[in-house]
Length: 269
Image (cartoon, rainbow, N blue to C red; front, top):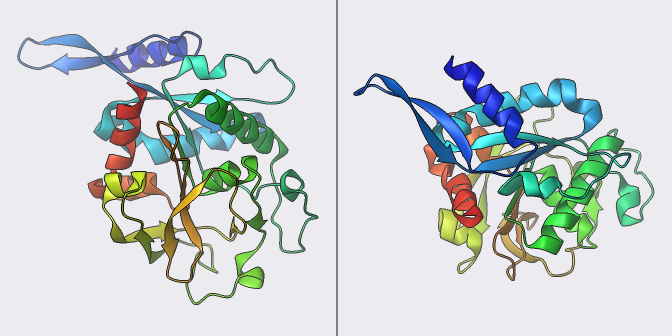
């Protein structure tokens, strides 16, 4: 009953911005209690709905339980009316995924470019543009941070192994698991407020990265090779991009990365 109730509420919340209720079992009084928590929108492109929703269940199911938010999948393409999508949620997460089409930053495709997803590009680009315009609380991870940079006029390395000289491994060559490396977080940044300044060990799965930084963005973390690992727009309420995957650290049992999501929820209140 609880599962059916919550599924109905989540579906209803996709079409009406209300405080999202949750059915929790009250053991002491032996009854269900209705609680409220923020709705966090996560972008998926229409053409990737099949595997994208499964991936979100794996990535964010643990977060929904641990941090206390409802996940609302937002599907956006250029062929539908786009106004009002942010009205359905309280905050936004742009996640990892395919390579960004280099036409978005006025470059021709590199031979090492991996296939973009046009629906995802449309979805992410519009949502990030709207979030910046509306000062909407946003966390962008991996590809999401790259989209943030491109929307602000920045460019990307289309393939780090062939375009960026580094001793740091940013993606497993066998594409089996995350690699791990340190980043250095700048003092006084939003990221430092969340995780502390100085060294932080992060997971890594990307072959693209920020080349030139977009207008209005501040670099607030780099890996030891100098690659950008975090971007912020510091005149916004909460506009943070990280090149790593804090959601997977939580899935793997490392709750020290939960503050990314509790901070996002605090900004959404």
